[in-house]
Length: 171
Image 1 (tube, rainbow, N blue to C red):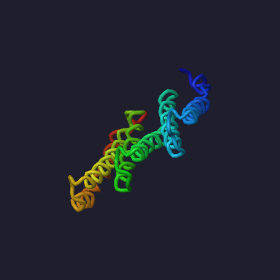
Image 2: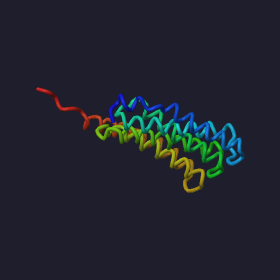
Image 3: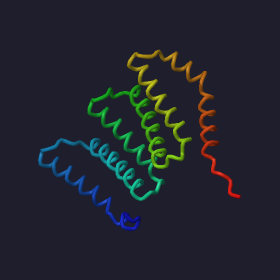
Image 4: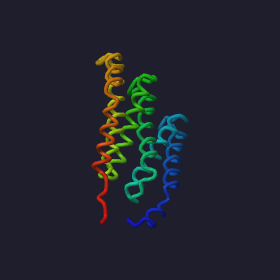
């Protein structure tokens, strides 16, 4: 699909139709949605549209923010509907994982950007480790000690991947 053709797709109109259908279903007492749910689903829908648009138009600009909106909206929606515990002790690791997944999306956009895997793995790893301390699988002191001792590894990996990615010199 050509970029100009794709930009003509009225995404705002599509979002308005979805919101209108949701409000109509609420008015007819078919679906019970409150304002907070509408905002959460709006953030998730916005993020999803930005992700799809980035991949279809081959433009990376809004991919990270769109991914962050999508995954963060999912974390908040899971908490709102009590599929996960609704507390800061769960939300903070959830947002760390969402940030890591957003970096992963940037890597999936361009596989040559190997250096983006380092922050992705760090954020996802920290989120999972903090989540596991909340569930009781790890001790918080063990996680803190591991982070305190091994944080320079992130610099080493990031630098090594940047060196590997370095473009060849033109002669």
